[in-house]
Amino acid sequence: MKLRKRRVAVNVELRKESHKFDGYLKYEVTIKNENGDLEKVPAYGKDLQDALSRVVHDSKVEKIDKVLISKVSNTGWAIAWFLGFVVIVLSIYSTIEHKYTGFWIIGGLASYAIATLSINNWFTLRNRAK
Image 1 (tube, rainbow, N blue to C red):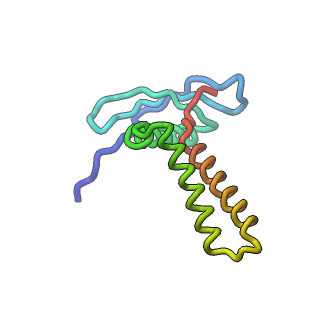
Image 2: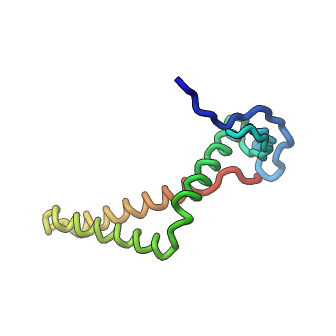
Image 3: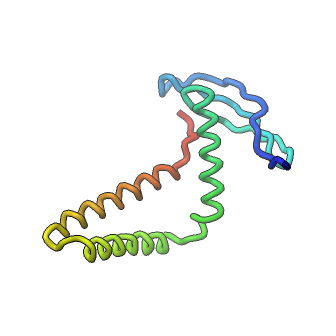
């Protein structure tokens, strides 16, 4: 079985403790990329595991952003979001008894808004100076 090459953290150094945010630390992580190049990345977190998870999260977000999100314009995202609203309203209106339709539509739209905000929150970069 052939193993896929991955990015690997080869060295981590603790740089300093944060003075603004109590309990946060700044690390400097040396990462060996798939092609063998070494890259130094600052990492912030409450401990080393938190800092490394923030670096991994940011690399996933940047990869998805490069492949998908940056290729669609803001107008395209607004149209897609509005069409999602329309689909939710039409599907609820056609399946629910007319007596309670308003409650279900409001609940469905609130759930859709919460899901949108959650996805947006996941796509924010976590590895920032604290």
